[in-house]
Image (cartoon, rainbow, N blue to C red; front, side):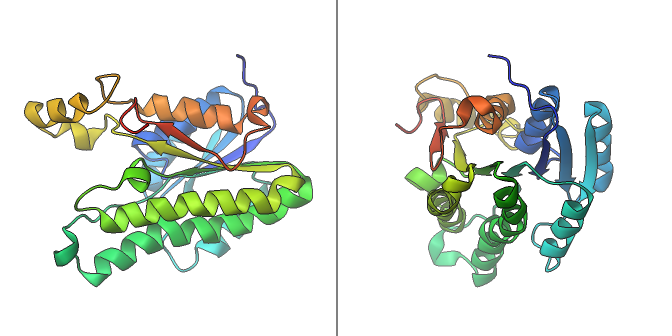
Length: 242
């Protein structure tokens, strides 16, 4: 299946590493111009340079002026594809979780998606074409001890996705979510062999996912081939959750 997104512009948040970087690179391969956004402007500038048809954007999604920053981007060029990927964790057992840990995770993972998406959606509706892809997590579907705040934010992203899809589907704007399972990143690389083995034992495919496993799912949802898919949560977990 040849996916061609030439002429489209994609904004990917959290594009400086991991899943976000992979998404930016794979979207770039389709011909889309990619706005690689993250707090680390040096890193996203480097990634954008390697992609070629891309621009590095300094963007702190939790900052009070995130709406204004996105609005400034929209004045320069329309955003056809939005990937809300950036997020944080601040894990602890619920009984010990500090209020700030709850508030910061919800503000960063959920509130930012509201602010950014509302700015971008206005022009998508007028253009009568758009793709909004929210990166949730398998934890938002099945929960995880020590991550009550993170699981709540990712479950809320799923509800946000489904409700918004119903509101703007008639304008030819699709809204979907991808729920990654355990993905091989710097964080999982730092785990010991025993911990990684215990993780993989729970996965039907008996391996951790790769960042490209998630990126290719996003590319598909951004394509014309996925034009009849909206309000869907794509579970990319290797059978960890079925």
